Image 1 (cartoon, protein in one colour):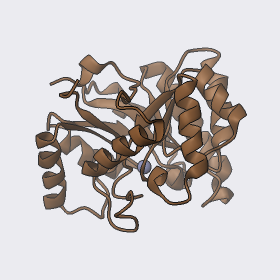
Image 2: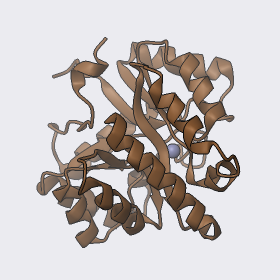
Image 3: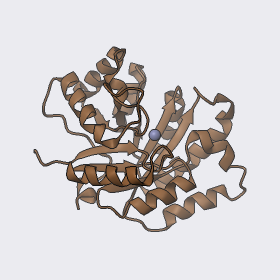
Image 4: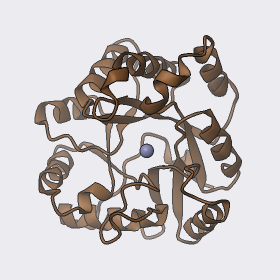
Length: 262
Ligand SMILES: [Zn+2]
């Protein structure tokens, strides 16, 4: 049990907040500490950077267009072809479609473009059988609705990354579909009581709980407000164990474990 790796299921190595030296430090330190990273992409440039680092054994990657970028990408007439090309190129380290989704909090005015791009990625998830890492800020129900529409035709796998919704009905539907909830530094914040109750509820209902840092964003306490690093995944694991009052918590994964063993 002790040598199970810790898994950061959603971080951003390609984020401009990190220097090249910092990224290499992160990768080597994580290797030493038996931490596996899933580095998400928010656009094509990110993906090229992630692709380079995916040569390291403990780095896996995702490709997606973030909802903040959806309205930019669809100005290109061939956006769908260009996105699909990435999944047509065989790559054993490409394990996720992400980060994709909807954000009705920060940029509700691009809702229609966001939906168009997200739906295309959900279609690709069914076609290429990859799990989705979904951003759904103030848009959990809308994201659920789209996933459910496609799931009726072909089963799909999805992680609701950075989950903060407390709506029991929606939580139950996600559990029924055997999808995943991603929790990060937010659960260490002082005002996270309701979210901590949500974690307990999901655990008791045998729902799938995953850990992530969303580095360089959302540093857990006591580093709140500072730049975040995937090594802080240890704090997230410990916090979840203390909320659930168990040592037996294991990160559930939407991918086969043998696929990430080196
Ligand atoms: Zn993210």
